[in-house]
Length: 426
Ligand code: NAD
Image (tube, rainbow, N blue to C red; front, side, top):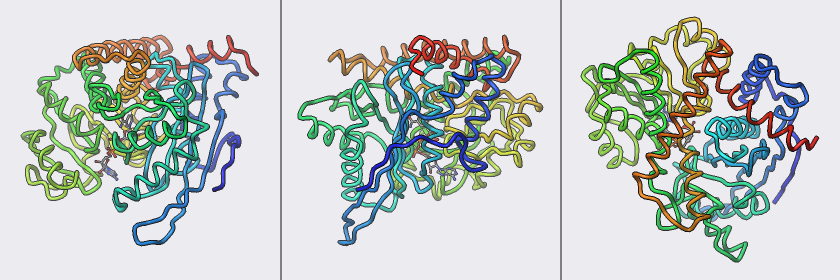
């Protein structure tokens, strides 16, 4: 098993996701007047670990998987961030996602730095046994990186409470003691928090309503399109529909579905649950493409699937007045200006999908405390925290006369800059 700890190059290959982070960071740093030495610290992740994970497959063959964990910053507290299982996972992507977690946690006002992990694999084609062996091998390889007060993983694309339960069990076996707070997004019986599973979608809903209020759009007359019907997209669609917003379109990797009268989301949820968690063949709407979904004439567009779907090439065709980024990095840096020029308000990922890590933080607090809250208590605290984060970003965007995205980075920089200076460890 190979393992290495190294520093990242300042900027990876062209069009890398980390470049997209640096482009926004540089812009916010300039507007905010961030000292070059502080910017330089943030341009480099603190630690990167890459491992090879040899796994015995069900057919008797051995396959070697690539695993990553990047800790971008621990200036505000232990690093926090999910673990992604997908075929496009690579060092650059994990580095970008880790940096976004630094900004996201600061914007959500949590005592955390940023981290992220991933394994290059296709979980849809693997058996439960293979996934368990892979998750346990990854945990063993990262046992020195993870820790309740060090680095705390959580679910992301392709992982959920099942994987977090395996991770917790493997970590506990290595440590010889029970540390429920080492991972969040766990099943309730293992110390998970009520409200965690729906939290990211709930945050998207709260941010959407807050933005509509600022824009003078009455949500009861609003229409929406949601890309992605996994953890984030399905809960976001359900909760938006629960606020009487007409969800005209939903989608997943199998295709997109449009209904002028609004899609019955409860029906779509039941359909997906009965069809291997996909919408393939959904009959409650007409089939369109994921590309068409992005340019529908709706008030609200929620990209909640994968990164890089809104680009310089299609941004000009977007008709939504408001984009609330459920996914991480759905908008490429070269689309930002096009959207701004069209007057489209973009609630950026680092703010909009912060509901998940907020309730992850609540889970960690409850684990430390050994006392558990009701769902109502979690949701009330979440909504208040999300609304406050939205107001802070809105305020900074107005004050610095910039977009919400750059306003969000400025909001984060205000905190992280202070922490780096107080600690002064450079
Ligand atoms: P998930 O694996 O539960 O769901 C992903 C969804 O996207 C699925 O419905 C899948 O079919 C769909 N999808 C995949 N490729 C697609 C494509 N090319 N076109 C359209 N749809 C496609 O993942 P998730 O946890 O919902 O995460 C989605 C995004 O939200 C990711 O960017 C993730 O980093 C981000 N995010 C997740 C959380 C969380 O708490 N789960 C928190 C913050 C941000």
